[in-house]
Length: 231
Image (cartoon, rainbow, N blue to C red; front, side, top):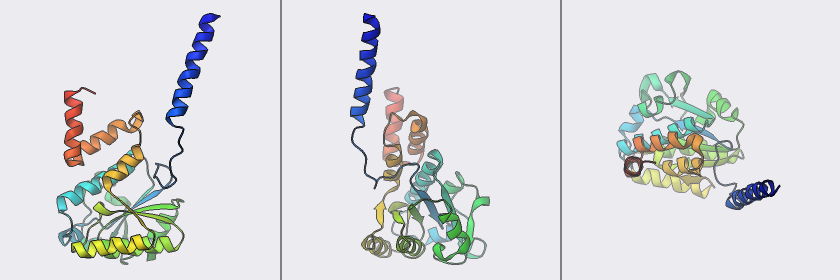
């Protein structure tokens, strides 16, 4: 009987500690794997050639982090292209690694919100939070971001997975969207916000492997810890 009571007390204490550890309700502003959809716009060769506000290497790595994150966490995702066969060319391999080209929605419109098929695909995800990333910031991101915001969506833009023909063009586009209520974030912020807790073992390996591959200095740090500390 005494052992039974002790066991029950131990379980109660563990439960209390667990509840205490997560007693604070997180902000509804934070992204979770189930509260948003992702839209990747025009990460294509021709668009990348003229991007000047960020190095092409960093841009591609950030795009990979975003696309890879959406796969790890099963985020509803739309990949859309513009004039793929006549001008803009193929999508970055860092995105095709996670999303094969057969599923892309090609457009002629610069604003994917004005394209019937793209708009239908995005709104069919049935998520009120929409996350955009793509090229160029001042045209193909500003357009859908402001349009979605006007239609009542809660809109986020992953700024370092976007790019433009100059730093000023990119910065003014981001400033314009922020003034309209769009929320900026970065690629690394995106993946870490989705993971949120390193005790979430089901996504831990996928997240750390992705960061080791594309996360620059942070990725090297994770690799070092895994090798040297053996965890």
